[in-house]
Length: 108
Image 1 (cartoon, rainbow, N blue to C red):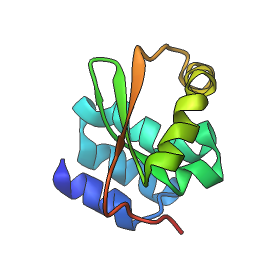
Image 2: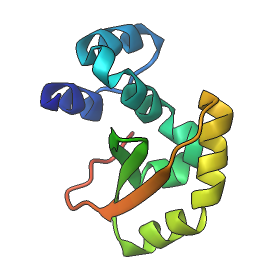
Image 3: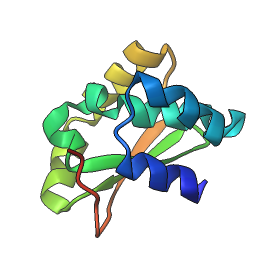
Image 4: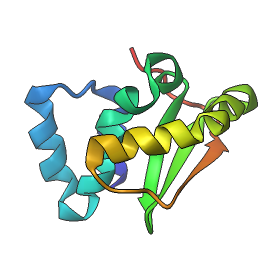
């Protein structure tokens, strides 16, 4: 899984690479990969530049955030993010947990 996340961190996935990423992730990680690739659409470009999904475990999405200010913004928008998720994927998430992650990668 680590190599998949490393590849996703350095590679902007467009349609050419998505099938490769899904194959590398295997069936177990399909849902997480889908969320990871849709993150910008779920939260918007500004917040996507300052946060990223870290893992999806027992229907709880864990999201790494650049700092406490951006984490507060995401917490305030949590209900909207959950609604966007349901709209995008047709299913509910139980919760979203935001954590501050140092060394956050920057998306270009």
